[in-house]
Amino acid sequence: MDHDINYKSNPLHGVSLKTMLTELVDHYGFEILYAYLYINCFKTNPSIVSSVKFLNNTDWARENVEGFYLYQFKSLPRASAEQFLLPPRDRVIPAGQVPGPPAELSLEDAEKLRAKRAKKADGFRSGPGRSTAAQRSRTPPRRENKYAGSATDEAVKTPGTPIWGDADPWGNSKH
Image (cartoon, rainbow, N blue to C red; front, side, top):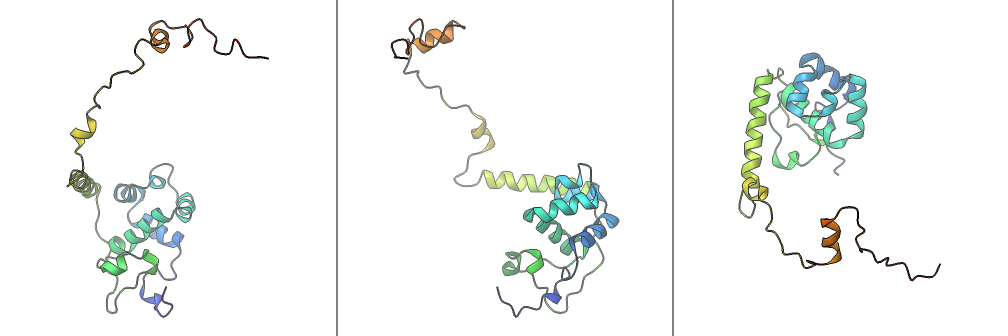
């Protein structure tokens, strides 16, 4: 990583996870955070302390919250392709871009966004070389049982009988 980067041009520089989460919860609330980020710590017994503990231990969730903070709460323009590959705390915001007012979000908008993402994911899954949901739901063709007529078939037909019938395969072994 390049050590010459000025991380002070990132709005996350010097902001603790607890402070960031407190700002987000005060402005949006846990319900909106769960609707947009779909992270369970915002739904099941949500609190700042438990959410911070979870986010500190889970990189993907913390990066999602940090990205939400940058691009929804701080209303910064989306990162460039090369900056997008970096975690949000390592991204550098170009000079002259200042944070704006928080985006107005609603549960209805979150539901529309979720439906849009689901439709896009379905399109991706059914793209070239991919099977569609209808193809995946079909049961595979039945194969002929190569053990037909064996002792295993008899055991299946008559519950309670051992697989080997009356013969004990270990009966001749020495104790």
